[in-house]
Length: 193
Image (cartoon, rainbow, N blue to C red):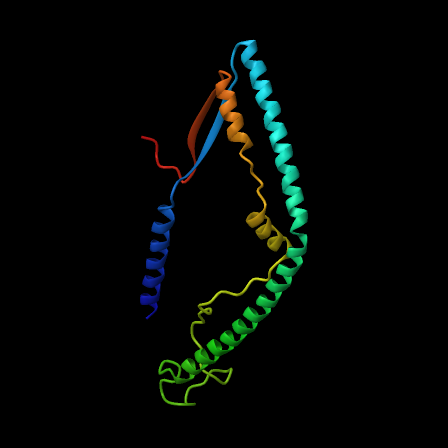
């Protein structure tokens, strides 16, 4: 019996090692901007930079106004989220109690727990060894936060990215500059060939 458990442990460890070894590589794209060599090109790039900064400032201002406008909705949605969490938590507690009762009934009625009938074999704790405990198959509800509710509302209603950087990149290239992109592996990289 012990040998079977040891073999099972080694098999599980081997499977975990194989799965961990097959992790997908992660890549990152790096962007390099090479400015134009002539002075008129550099002046053009400076104009592009000024427009980008103005675009970002305008975008940030609109985002702040939008964020202030949704403030009353944040409190209402947060109250709703807390109410929903309370309901979910009550359902989770009821399901967990039911699950634990089912586990205890399964232990009491299992042949492995009572191989010689009810009450003939008991440990020093006046009961059979309950065996392996498996966690419930459903997730614990997470408590909402006001910041998470605000972030969700801002994502749905407010535009944080106004496309200033792509416009700047197009302007930069139009002034005679070069935009170079390079994709490099940063984690779980395949061996070099």
